[in-house]
Length: 210
Image 1 (cartoon, helix red, strand yellow):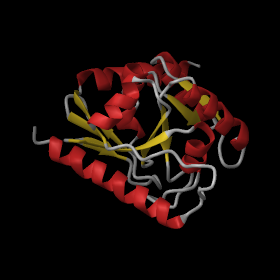
Image 2 (cartoon, helix red, strand yellow; image 1 turned 30 degrees about the horizontal axis):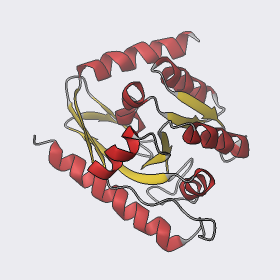
Image 3 (cartoon, one colour; image 1 turned 180 degrees about the vertical axis):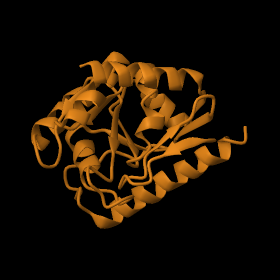
C-alpha cells in the first residue's frame, strides 16, 4: 500500500504543476452535461497525461488485476474515480460488466482502445462492445504535452508530462452508439475510430502553441 500512496502523491505533485487545458467538442460537452453514457476512447500510452481528468470528470475505467493495476486503481479512487478490475487474461467479462454499470449510471467511462497488449494504435472491439451494451457514444480523445519523460522500452510508448509542462487534451465529436444489429468487430469501424483518435491527438498538438 505504501507504493500506491507514494505514486499517488508523486503524480498529484506532477499534475498540480502542469499548465492544463481540456478542449471539448460542443456536441460532446452537451452529452457530458446531460450525463449521457459516454466512452472516452484513447490510445494506450496517454494514460499518465489523462488521469488528472478523473478528478474533474469522476471517470470510470478498467484496471488490471496485477500489482501495477492495484496502484492505478488506488490512484484513480483517491482522485474520485472508480475502477473495474480485469484484463483480457483474467476477469475480462466481469470487468466489462462493471464498466457497463458505471457507464449507465452517468459516469464518463475511459478506455484505452488498443489494449491491453496491443497491437499499438490498433482499435480492438471492446470499445464497441461497451457502446452497444450501454448505448454509449464513443468520443475520440487525444492528449499531448510540451515536454515529457518517455518510457521507450514500454510497448505502448507511454509518456509522463514533466512538471510545469503544457498539457493539452482534446475531446472530439461523438460517434453514435452501436445498435444491436451492428457488428462490434467490424474492421472498417475500428479503422475509422483510429483515424478520429489520431485527429484528436493532432488537435491537441496544435493547442500546445496556445
